[in-house]
Image 1 (spheres, helix red, strand yellow):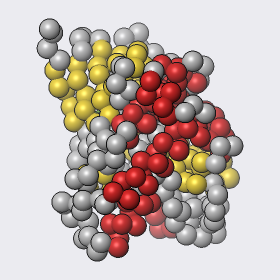
Image 2 (tube, protein in one colour; image 1 turned 90 degrees about the horizontal axis):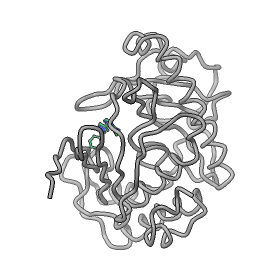
Image 3 (tube, protein in one colour; image 1 turned 90 degrees about the vertical axis):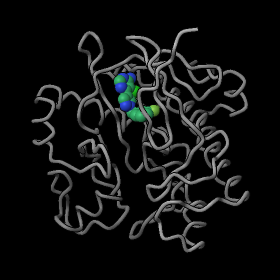
Image 4 (cartoon, helix red, strand yellow; image 1 turned 120 degrees about the horizontal axis):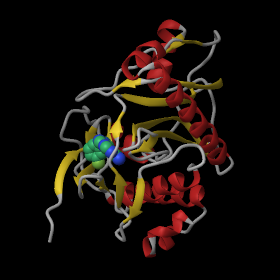
Length: 286
Ligand code: Q0Z
């Protein structure tokens, strides 16, 4: 048997090298909130995220090529082409939330995009904006202007990354909204393949790489509930946790409710029963 080399750990994912050209991305069932990984897992969370990501890869090939090579039968592992990743996070925002809202409130702009006056928290933007960020080794990614990002990757690649990111967001946000999920913002990781072609990597358009809101009950002027993590956040708030590690263990009703929300997001977006995905992950690629 050949050695599989562990090359990286994220908060909730692991990365292995299969050979010179291929990596294995494994999504665990770990969940993080307020930047802390909790001691309790959410069963099938890794499968939901892997399946959703593959679903979007299959449907956005005409917008940009991607790294997906194959899904493993476990449903949580993606064999992918090794890319040379760009040193920026390609963030797109359709709504004002998180650091976008914070920056707008302080300066009236986000990453150099001057926005209309009078926008409130969670407002839909007149048009989606590309808001790149640096890749922090630890701590939080930092928003940068388009000019700073262009300096990091070069003008030509920057323009292509922006165009592709906006096109991906527009396609997915419209598709998801029709199915009851608002994608407030999302982060893409782009890289260059062996031929120097801009290629979409990592995981895409999942609740871990995006802010998903229920379309039902959407209202501006305040924060929106998280589609996937709201039960966890409510429990953590009620538990009086100070947000310092370690986080609290989750009770079974919070685990079950959260698992149901992940599965619901998968089924709404893909239109595929989650059990069918577990039986054969390749159903999301058809
Ligand atoms: C993804 C990450 C994870 C830790 C590198 N196709 C690719 N080619 C080159 N690099 C990557 C990919 Cl996906 C790559 N990450 C993020 C994932 C654990 C870090 F599971 N880092």
